[in-house]
Amino acid sequence: MPYGGRIADTIVEDQPLLQIIDLYKQFPVACGIGDWFRHRPPHVVHAVDCVSLTVKISEIPGLVGESGSGKTTLGMNVLGL
Image 1 (spheres, rainbow, N blue to C red):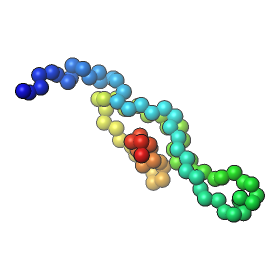
Image 2 (image 1 turned 30 degrees about the vertical axis):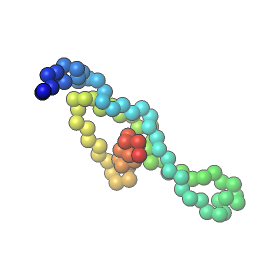
Image 3 (image 1 turned 60 degrees about the vertical axis):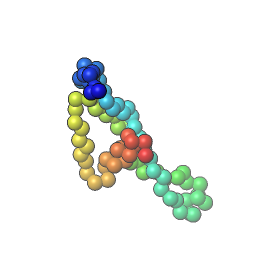
Image 4 (image 1 turned 180 degrees about the vertical axis):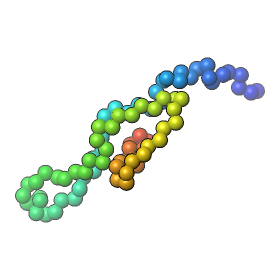
């Protein structure tokens, strides 16, 4: 029996499909033994810092940026990896 309903009746095009608010991701950097003895705080690299993004159902998103700007890190966080 074929599907008799219409999906288009239930979709609101302005409804967000994906919404991210103030996403950040930091990676720890290994410290040397001298930093440990001097009680320096651990170093971190800010890969993604305060990124907000909304993608609506009717949109086709694209993410563009320089090498090392955090595109892959953003995608991995969105996917929960």
